[in-house]
Image (cartoon, rainbow, N blue to C red):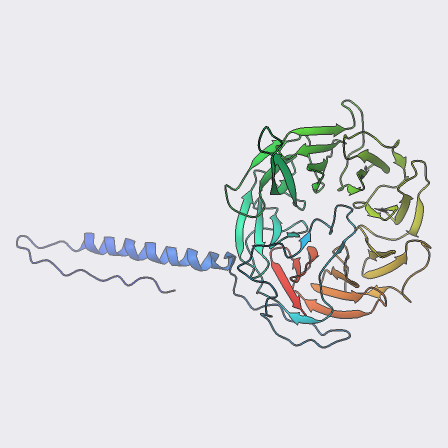
Length: 449
């Protein structure tokens, strides 16, 4: 952009002593300096605009198919409709199985060019309805990104650093003395200092509804279930917060020592499954926070969050993956696989556990445990950096070299791969609209049939 043209005004016809020129020249020099400085700042920061117009990521060669290299695939949703096109909470559901709906087996390109709203992304994004919610750990803000075009529709600003995914869910509020009620959809985020923030998840209104501090640092993502926000803390407590920011219950009772919870608990059939840093699995009632069992000792420190798979709890640990039956308080843990580096949580769908180690994706039959579903593990081009996500017979994951893979869940063969151009930090988030991943500072969309 060229700076505005400065036109010299006509010299007035005046009589009297001659006009000294040095004040005029000095004023002109100051104006030119200010305009030049403004232009320099504009050029320096224009790359951080939400509407980043850099070249879209190129498609890496597909393994089993050759997709057309195009961008701007036709949208499959109506941009004017604010209805729900796909609801996907953290890891797909509150059981944290990584299973969701949507996705596609044929690759086309991307819906929109990469978006750089600003800041460093350190947590998985989530999708709910029309929006993709992405946390900036350096800007202390949650961006609500329109899935149809990548436009940031609104934000939620917090007062503390966030390292975890947000949550979106519906709460029922009483509106009158006669038992009338209404339902509101809320976006919930938790900062490292244990402050819980709420706002309208669909936009509108102020950027914040309420906030409450839990009195402890938090490393785990929040979950929403049964009109409650469930948060595990580093002080060794699991806390339920109501939709009006009141504390509903705390586990355990005050002055009872529990090892820190660094990972998000899973929830299934009214039971919360929380793995503490001392290698114990806690079963807690979602209704009142009471213990269902004495904590079950696994003997191994968890490396990520548990997954509830039908009647089994799957726990990734430092060096192995454990399985514990959900209905037995005194059951001994069993091993799916031992002596592996598996810091990421597995995914589960239709009786099969999908786990990653370094650059390998493995599929294990949950009933037989020792049987590998495929002839051998799928090998990616570099280290796998995201937990796997399963959707309608396809397993998705991202890698350190910036490749997103889609693998057939029955055969273990690659369907396609997409080059995002930089290391994948979070996702893939799979919806009926598309697939979304994040790098350190970009939000990237992937489209297919």
